[in-house]
Image (tube, rainbow, N blue to C red; front, side, top):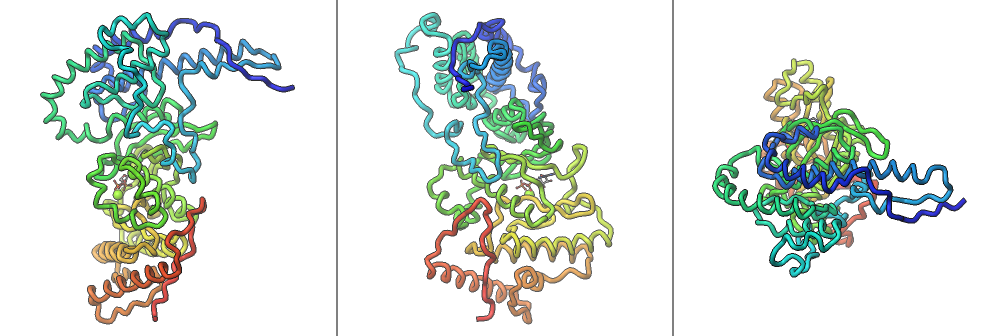
Length: 493
Ligand code: ADP
Ligand code: MG
């Protein structure tokens, strides 16, 4: 009962979607400002009417998906109960979501097959193919090929025009559409030159770039997400959106999720290099990567760190899926209302005391069980939800053996200690005791001289590094478990 699968030309679809598309799209281009994204059930919070092309691509994807649905129906009808089935797979327009690597341990950064951020886009189009009168090529080539070429040509539009990652999606544009878009782009260029200065200052514009928006749209289109609702937070390094989870391979996601989009504007990240460069888990890769890949490393790092925390049962968001530089995780909050940061939570003294002990316990767990130092711990990165403190924002977290790991931990301790002392929690330890309690070290605190205490810490770090180097253990294996042995620092030698 072998099931043979080979491709044949499918029966013609009910109507030519290419025609529908070109007409509608042409019309759409002029009415784009009226439509907005909400038409498609995605409100990406940042209506970018300048980026018509991206909208066109979204439109195309929508049509392609409808085409595929029709194709699937026909495939089913065609094959019926027959033992030998014929696959229409090759005729599908929307290819299965490019990275099916949804597991937590999968390394998304390695996937360059459809990398929309690749530095050089392939020059698939021989120049003569469309030199001179562009209109003439219309009838010469078959529609699909021509469409692909047109898509490739989008790349040649002015750099100010956001072409999205259509090049990576096997997108086909009809000549008519292509020409409309081209014309539109020229007009747009002039307009954009005028607007440019204003645009620079618009924070909404800068929340996420068009490529990211397209990736977000794809997540909705592929069913990973039900919809994307709005922006919870815009930070220097990330933008966080609220969304409703869809499903992946029939596995449903949580109803409420967040998308943490790591920013692809690189300036802010430069000063964070030292967190990742010296982390042995990422050292090897770091040197070889281009900036866009480095951004993805941040997302990957957060994912791994959250996984460790979950294992230790520290209250934290649960990773749902990682797509390039977008991390989808469970939402801490309820009915679209995010849990308040500890800084904003109006807690009574009993809750505050509770919170303090929870944080103390969490810091110890993080260090002892997860072998991690948060490295940006403060009342800004802890949420208060259902009577518990939840730990978030761990993309910069490092292992204690990181060359500056203990210094980061000291800073964390200071933030925590200061916060709870200011809030009047009498039980709150001072920074030195907190540090020693979390680490199990016994750095003398008699003098309470901060400089001396930090000097001790730095000396420890130095000794640990020498120790590691002497044993020739420059890199530890990063397993899927991703949990190394806890740090052994002999405090009293
Ligand atoms: P950043 O590096 O930009 O500070 P964070 O991870 O701290 O990124 O996220 C920014 C803000 O978004 C947080 O302060 C919090 O208010 C909100 N947030 C982040 N993750 C979640 C989540 N899983 N559930 C609810 N709110 C979240
Ligand atoms: Mg934060």
